[in-house]
Length: 549
Ligand code: GLC
Image (cartoon, rainbow, N blue to C red; front, side):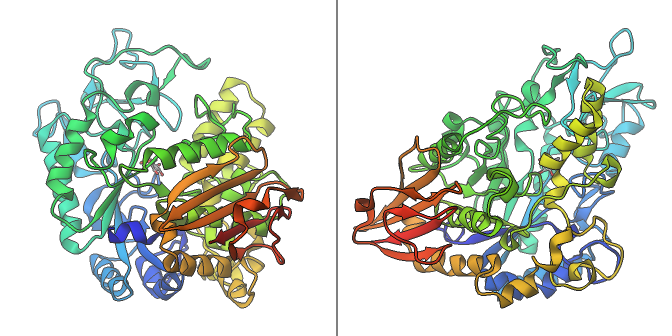
């Protein structure tokens, strides 16, 4: 087994992690100062969301220079120190490659936009207007509004899957691909332990650009449906693998919205292009068809379990699964997967137990180990997240009320996962002595690293213990997964089997006491449970327990 199959990864959102300069935003030195904290969590790799030079319209997912550090985070020397200090602690640094698009401030784009016949004129996706001056297609960008923006100099539109400040690169141009591979190799030479590859399913555009059937009153169609996972994309990605991945002791994990379960073998495993793939079937449990914040579907526990079990099956013999319940784009897991009023501490611990006992590499997200939860600010002006603002605007234009639109923002805003890390009970939770770029969650005096370390029953101590258990029991890494009672509406139960042993994990998602057939675990010992006096054959409200025989 590879090192990256045995480790726990930590997704770190640098802007909100730890500020050492009073600027109100986190920095690389702040990460260096907290490496021992991550070590205590048994972390083997830190995925840093982008720290490259960027105007920060989308918090770094708009890159102006792939081979430089944004001054707000520090310098390239700080990055080298971070890599070296992390290495001393057995931790590798994973770089986020944002290769579908750049910033509009990237010199590549500035040159491309300067005329129709410069050296980089074909590095982005330029098209003429229709005869009436409107954009070439009716595609809506993922952050709302048309996916096309007019450029006066070229008298043409350029395409952007995300915000207008994030023009899409033209992967059909081999020079573009080479420039990106060179950037990735720059990071390998520096010592990167792996890559997370952003929004990768959008890089290949269709040969012919056509209007889609409008999916909303604005007459537009979500661009995702028009360009995700377009035929031919895998050729590019095999080339990427040869040019970047092969021959190095690193791992790659792609962000792959739009890849179906059946297609996974083309993407990961022996014939695939990445080592792992973040797929979103369980995360999108309330978006069965479109990801529209205003029209979430109802969902039940069997829906969530089905998605998880399907992913476990798909990566059983081929490829490897990155397990995650939170990231910087989604609500906090306790809010996402539990009904309002659920016991916060038990719920967070239960999600943690699942995260660490499914088959795959757990990706813990900053603050998840503290049991951080969503924020709900009154006004859209309080929000920073470009997608929340876009979704709100679109909802209002579609005719929803302010209250309805804000309820959706409260439920889905990406800012909920981006509020500053809560270190202690001092002002701004010890994140900064300046003005934090995003308000700290009000609950920081209770939920913070310092207080939680002192409390043996805290979420943080639970995650520290889980980290040790995961290291101690091979069965959690190697064991086969088998789901029990898939139709049960309240219990998620599964076994892992390896070498004559069986691990059984039982999680009660409800606030009721529930019985089950204890014969499934007669011989087993309880390794860890989030309640006192765990009893075989019975689950207390919100109980999560791991038995081993
Ligand atoms: C990915 C990132 C997200 C970003 C988007 C555009 O989905 O995770 O944060 O906004 O790509 O780069």
